[in-house]
Image (cartoon, rainbow, N blue to C red):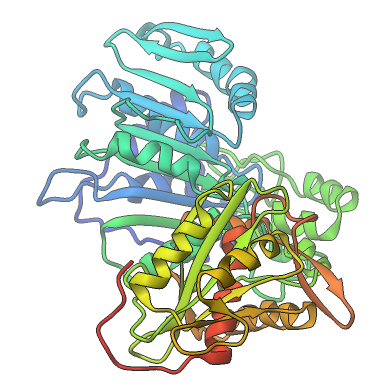
Length: 498
């Protein structure tokens, strides 16, 4: 018998053999689909399907898997969805949804790959009432009333529906949390619900995947045995793509000796070294490393002069400011969005920043800033006079904000472009140095994922023109933090509450 190369996950939640697991039920469905599990699929199923002996519920409400391309992650999650619909362990009928980066992507995957698998499965066909393929109404209805439905990734996804299980495929495409936010409310009252997430590595825009990887790695290391189950197969630091022998240590679907006989007829690897070589020759190095090394592609961020990989680890939902605050506000060039942020110091001396308001348009902005002035007594308001916010300068001065503060006034700071560039670099540096905390707010996460920069003399600044979405939240935070660092004095008093 051939000795297989060792392929172990870089991070993984460990199997607790003393616990019952229904992972074997998933494996049986894989066989029925003609897709018997490879060892890594069986590991993920066995751990992710563990039952908490105290509650009798799935031990892990959230299961996150990140692996190289063509590793069988979607097929694995399909068996999970089918199990939910047909296994007698669940109270039927069950509602299951599958989402991809777009409705079209979900439809293409199911019509081209997954529906045919189910139709060919002789043991499963008798359990299926009907497969619906109508545009926008794609779902599988089982004879017991359970169903698997395809949904779009819009904000309304899942709302008003009770869901027992949901899959989010290829979350590296998600620059914000709208897909997850559309699903979670529909699962909140279901005690045994599971949210399944799977993806190959992403880019500098992959805000959701970066946050999930950080949470997953932390959960695997903490070894709590509940909450999040996490599995990551990825190339080691310093990986050389020319080192083909190293591929077998992190590509779990790669066969060392095709045609594959590794599973002694019970299962087989699905990828060959010749296929990977062909991909390496035809792809850009960064994209090959992303797709097959499962290494995030930071090349686009580097090309624009900035990356904030430490952003996710600076999130702290319990963070509070205890100093006087600085305020920053930003208006999109087309006035479609406006945002207000505050910044200050925490009790431990670290910086704190948060968006306190973001709304469409600008009609609300001056009134809100006036109310903030009266309620919170900020010492400085910062704006970018080169942007759309400049139109509000006269109104704000009339409301006792002044560039030359006197009694009863507060400083209105106008940042020139060189100072603005310094403010942008300042925020990035403090995040990298872990000297700053934010609340993990969705508008900020989305802006960080979408932001691009433009060169400015020997420096750089945020670019509205090049950014992929509204960045008013990030610009407001940047200005507030700069205002605090320039003018702030830490004072110990009760935390400010917004």
